[in-house]
Picture 1 (cartoon, one colour):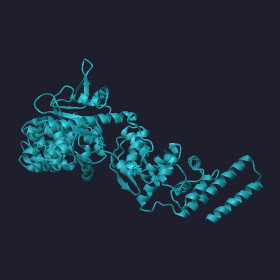
Picture 2: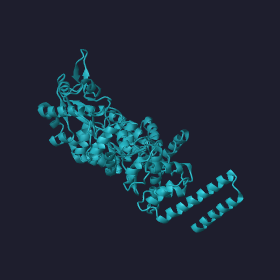
Picture 3: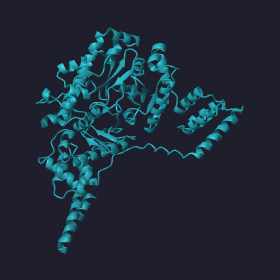
Picture 4: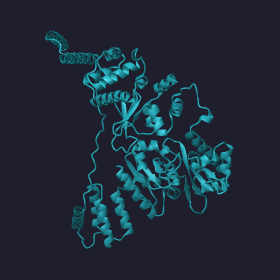
Length: 584
């Protein structure tokens, strides 16, 4: 087992593994990005592929490839081992039997069985395929988005799942079936077009269903289940992630068909929240991949109110937000079918800053002759993100200002009223400036750091390790503890192996992370200074001399405390002086 674990460690590129979920930027040998374990605004999450470790220097999250899989996929170590073995191409000597599958694996298997059933039923149902055709969904779109159909039959899916050996009680917890008063089970989705919902890792975790005809509710979505939290999942995200990362922008729409329409129009950054308003957790997910969001909601009043709520969430998360102007009565799906793909792309490309959008929406809703128009207009201007936005709208509003014909005078009047409003309101707290988050250096002496870092250099490893084996070699308590941990882990010397393999054998975890932090800190500083991070031999020799001199000073101090005679103290002091002269 140990050999298999080490082989997996040596084959896994941690940056590639974590990069499937977190947008990473290269920093020398390391990578950094927004931490997925807390609401990170500035990049504080570092990944070091060379030693196979990650660390957030804000919240403290840390670990290796196995820890990453266990934390992000909520699995135990044996299951993480199987997942990583599959990625690394390592054949395990013992695989779990089917009856040993984890609860999560069983849930995912039930979801996959349900999807296969829905897909088969769509191929059988002429009514469902005709509905798809009316919505402009051809076979390619149906296959790409894995669309299915739930027949309007009481327990068709329940029967299929039970025959396949899935527990219907467990399936009820997944929102696939429900229990009737007699104790039997019936299907949750019936007579609906089915939209599979995958999480950011691409796992099938939920379904959405739309009635083919009229009725209420038009849509139903899976409720929260052991696999699914709708406040954390965005429809279409696995398909949109690459485009979002490449463009630095996401496009937020309202529903399943809007997402599909945008992708068909080559707006491949489109995602949607699921049966709920956009949440801070949705925003946190997007924040790992982009800094700008274009909101493309329906043009009706309900859609615009939802857009306002989404804007507040996105602004709080630090996004640059734009609003796409949709023609009255249109959404992305209808716009694609009536005006074509170019119209969808144009709506996104011409998205307006928030202040511009809100002023124009106000002008379309309230006549400028109404006092309420100006009250709301000044409130909007007071909340503008920049003075450039304000001045642009002052110029626009001057032409609507009542009682003043001169444009310059109208602009000055608007500015005066705006200033009075701002003065009377509490000033908004200024945003904190963006700053680079750097790793914190471990509290080791400079000489100790050099010796530990030399363990990563094959040509210096033996000399550095022999220094660690010397009694009382280190200057600080932390250095002594880390030195003992390394010597205990490798009594015969550090093996000639990949550092991410042998470093994983250092115990306890706290000292292993101490070493990892030291390496990341050193590599990050070397990258910032544009110098090699390899330790030169003369640096190690100098560090060893310093540690030796420090050890002799400590010995003299202890002998003084023990009452050694003056002749012996002079002899030791002279020896220390000669050692220092040789170094100089």
